[in-house]
Length: 480
Image (cartoon, rainbow, N blue to C red; front, side, top):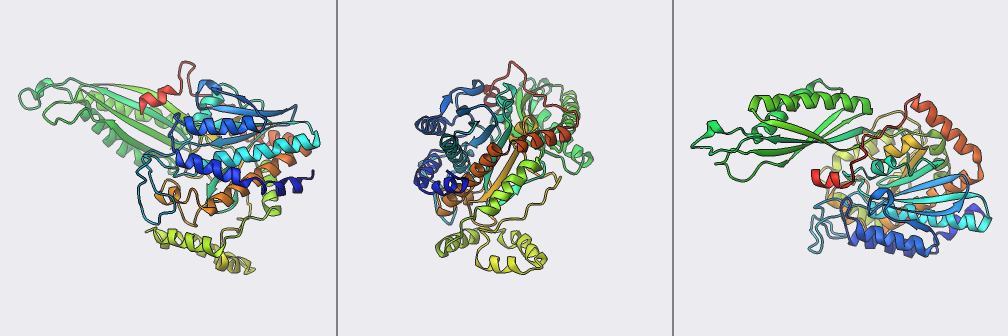
């Protein structure tokens, strides 16, 4: 079986892919509680003849499916967690909660995990048909949203055997992902004070809530004196109670620090710790800080990115039908920010000297492939794929699964999660990942060059997990 024949055969069973993706959409589960999704995907892997390992890294919803022998060893990363509180009816053109569910797939992970697994299934079939040496491993990675699931798995060494790792993400465009992301760390600060009657004996109390508030004020002043790329976010998760007549003896705040490199994150952590200590001194309280989770920045790999791009050029993206364009138009009309967010497309049109893009845009931008240009730009998001990229050469693509200018973590993305755009984009992504995997199997020099590039980019640095040996995924659950 040739590569082209195998990719073509992926159309024959696409109904199974769409069904699995829709079922996970129907059962949205948040970090480390993805029991339905992980069970569904493990059952699918076993049916396809993969050797499945449960409880990967000591995490009940993490797993791997393995087939083959020898190298190259190719990892396909799959996610399947939803976002809390994002209930939304499918295909609705206005914000409409679904009474049957609390959460929602506002980042398209119902598609992400299924698309990567579908690629693994057909990469396995390629190995079976050709008898080539190689191993394909699908990683079921829970808790990408706020749980750093891959960082916990990386601590156990499950990615070290890989020669390459491939992944993708649902999006509103087709492109190879390039550049870096922001490293991050999440910390918990608990203030302990003394309760008292706020009217009769306020002098006897020491307010933990005051400590939290002063820490937040101090952090606001810190923000003026950090590098422009850094970000510091917070959420007060326990204000101490609901009685204003009581001096609050306990309060808790979570902080997330982001910066281009982990060493910059750790420097800001030290400064934030001092602000917490100062707030405790000012209020006569005591503060304790706890590590919750962390994710490294992405290390780009142009060797693998070019392999993905060549396949994206060879395998045509699905063209949007009149019905799909009408559907997308209704979604776009729901967005208050549509007019502003269209500006980048207009700028892109103006820069197109050949005029081809303008004609394409007039019909549909959904099958347009963004030209690949390797960049070192640091993007404003974070992902635990970054941890994997420090260990083994890693590359990703974006595939169109929703209307142009839809933004992740919005009800519009949840609403489109079972649409035909979502289905066809997921199939397209699976084809690209599978095709790239075949190239890696057939050309041993790819992994050698990719490994050398990773070594050069790290420049002597190595991956150092920030998660202590005694920490488990439960730490995140108890510190939220």
